[in-house]
Length: 304
Ligand code: GLN
Image (cartoon, rainbow, N blue to C red):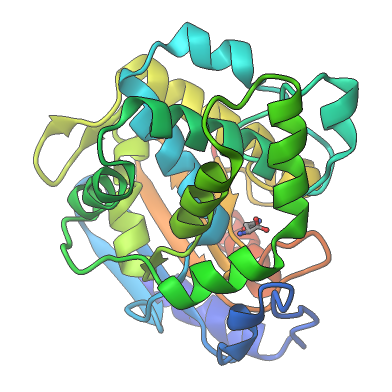
């Protein structure tokens, strides 16, 4: 199928809609982004590529990293990880502290901030050079050595991320963080700050549409079973308290970030990344959500 015409059609429809979203100004550095930018890129498992607008411009991937962190934790004893983090949808905002106390420091799932902090802790314990190994993992997935951290964004979040600091301390108090809390927070902020384009993201996530194999080099990134489980977690938890809405309207496993990016995959078919910086009230890209809803509906290509 040639998706280019559908892309263009949807883009011109979206131009008519007022963008009611807001930039993620709670991380001051993210408020300097030009909000009028928009990009999309779809890559099929047969390596056909379709793109639109600012698909080569890099942006802060923020929470999208959480899925890649989970994938990198693949070699670590899985049962142990699932003792420390749940796999249930939270129904709460990404930075909520409320459930954590009720559930004694075991975060609901690895895609809310609390759960991602625990995954970061696991990676810090098991990797020799966590920061370096993580970025190399992402570069290999995307087949692009230029991908990097952004220290401005990471520092900006370090200065203002008081809720995340509260969260990691609370989890530590329940004994579910083994490393020093500042080290975990530092690592978390670094991973959030990685900058990628829609093109790089679609490429990097293609393994989740290909049973865990990176189609670029034929290498296994995660096992078939783990790939299935990661998609299931994205489907149920990727959009926090808007996960039901995303399943209802878009119908693909996916993950958003407060940089305005969204990645979604259709197992067996394609991965698609969209980017529009203004966010709706739940912290997900306002226009990105609409684009994907129109796309899967027009092309009849949701998983449902
Ligand atoms: N760095 C962001 C935070 O912790 C990530 C949240 C997101 O992208 N939803 O607040």
